[in-house]
Image (cartoon, rainbow over all chains, first blue to last red; front, side, top):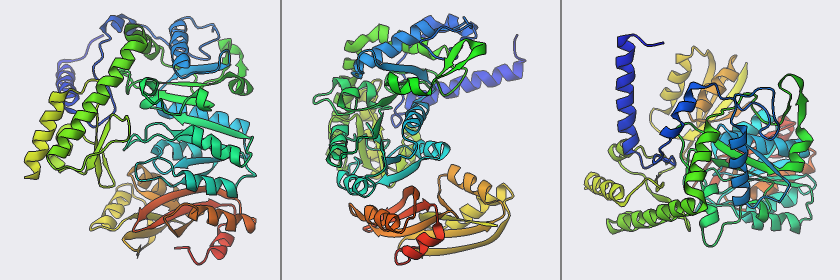
Length: 371
Length: 129
């Protein structure tokens, strides 16, 4: 099987364009320092992890055993309750969030989902898809949920089960909602019927290595957590991990005869290659390697903040964040570095591949444009 | 015919952007009217293809409130929304969804969808936009 020459030329040009665009970005939370060529052989095969990763299927062209190791690694990192966790490798953070909300809805169909204004836009879409009652809560200036507003809103609606959608690393400012504080509010109003989903797309794999450790995981009160695989870990194909308390998952599982498996996941057919990518990454780095990546990101972010302030830019970061926030930059700089901008602010995200030299180049270009 | 309302920061060319976007997909607009609340533009569109218009506009990044929703203007402070929730609850109006669509100058515009929009509009008449 091969393409005709004009199409091959087009493909070759596309590869060059992508290579160039990949070099320049520092505004998106996507790692690019990965090397998975040892897995290339697997691209010849129709790997499909359909069904539940923890139950064997009649389909045998799968990587489920590796997927299970990935989930187990993250369950430990996120302090999941022993013998009461379950998860799978998703297509990305949005699917993981959809899964968490779906579980919440099944448990508490009359519940109200509370989420902050800085929540990722896909959540509103998920809530609409799931037809769930929802109330958006104000945020404070740094992007964290406004606990006073949440408290007052829950006080009014205390007769309804509370479903909390908490962010651990908001899109623009990497703000983190403290789920211990949120649990405290629910305790104050004696709301026993509750569910907390933690959207830790970017920060899920960073938080365990921070001091103090943010309050976002199972030991802090989360019932499900979604992490993105293509952000901090790094993957050529978007993917993620979702982990939930197993007893909640068991309530929604249904048996499907023709695949000899349980229907517990959002999609039927599931990518069998991305679990291999994540498996490779966790085996190559382990916890120590991930910790080093986190420290590198933090140190680069600290450097970036300092360099920007030195040229008079009002740059800031949330505590222990790899995201540096600054006022909206000129279009030329935005384009060159592919910087996301919203509501008058731009940000740099110091992913593990961002080096001090990249920051120096950016600051130099910004200074030149502002003169 | 159904109504949708776009909530956006008022700027030059906003109306043109909206109408061009809808025209590209041959969405028939029965009527379109614009108003302002402080620096926020509200563009009300009546169309027999409001669902498609809604999807197109949301995908293009606009905040859109459907006919089933109402728009209220509140002080941007903790508890403001909670007081609205209480008022609705006291009048047996069940809230489906509450979304902050714009914030500026100490105020926020909030889209509320509930089981009885007409009754909600009456009850919240002093803050409905």
